[in-house]
Length: 425
Image (cartoon, rainbow, N blue to C red):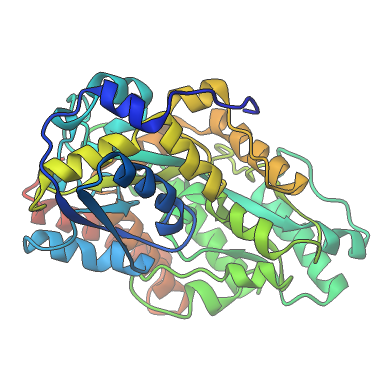
């Protein structure tokens, strides 16, 4: 992915795209401040407003928790922004505006064919364009290579298991005096990588939740690592409910040997670590069943509640042009989703050699992602399952229930969510 793009100018291609409607106005877009967020959209907004001088796009900076927890409530009440960068791609699908009438629908369907179904909820085979996939993300592990060097311990090769990494990072932490061997974001999405690697199915092909021996084995191992202090309680044990929590600052400050997060923090690594220590992204650890990274990503979705659906649709269709998506992914150091960018490549000219290598490592995990992970990612009730796993695992860590009870509650939580939604998948 190293060839420089040679594409038509944004304004020219957008006009060729044949957008319908031309009502001027103003819309608000929610975006966060990390990875593909407000900063990544600014250049594209400038392009759009230059081509459409009567239109105004307001980028409203909100935190990630607002996107996860407040936005669904706003949308359900008929309020909220005109559009937002979302990561619960399937869970919010009933609120999405189909932007097909507002731009070059054929081009958009061709560019984003593999990922548009994630935005279609219970109708994945429809031809709706319910948003623009902005980037492809992959879960993965960052490792402090300097600590391995200081400890005189060799780093495991690709194909190493989760247990291999737990064992070796304990030795490195003991040798260097680092506080924590391993950490993982408090996120059901990150835990799903471990669970699927241990054989968990999570959801069957009928859209029903699955609680099986693979999930049980993963939870038992995860709990054991906390009891053995391989992982700190500060993440999964410190807060309750489904609250998302990350302490990537521990890795940035060289306080942990191994951090399981994802490709969206590459930009932060590149800008904040610099020459402080050597780091690398390693191949996804393996379990008995797979070496499963979870795919994911963010999308810019417009909402049916928008008071200006024409402008919302036209703006999203504009963003979906490959050269505009390229600006976003280059800014955020993200893996592109547009077919043109994947085929022709992106040249990340302002990044370190470590970041270039990390991007290559993340991309190398994509062919190894099992179908189970893709099915889980596109499931309408993925958020319900992830929230249930986060909540119940934390309760096990805090001795509020045992693993078997947690498994029962996870299944009950998701079944209740399905019932509350009318029982449809």
